[in-house]
Length: 127
Image 1 (tube, rainbow, N blue to C red):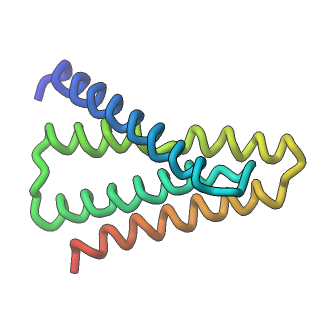
Image 2 (image 1 turned 60 degrees about the horizontal axis):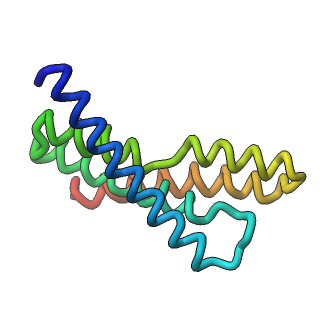
């Protein structure tokens, strides 16, 4: 795969992932009454971690993802979809607004649930 092909796959995938993140995060935020807690970002991050765990497991077990599909999905789509930069900013904003309890819950939930979802996704396909 050429560098140009990889860049195009990452760019197109990233655009699609970012659109998905925007839509899903906004939808979750609109449905929840938690106000300042970034639940939309949490849902997106956990789902993204689950999906990358599944894709990584499928690739390890069956080598089912060629290089182009792997770059497109795992780097492009999921790179655009998961929102750890938003997570960092939102956590800092909570801390800045003297909501340290919510900031700490956000950090713990993002890390523990994200890692747990990646492990579950990976385990689902590894058997």
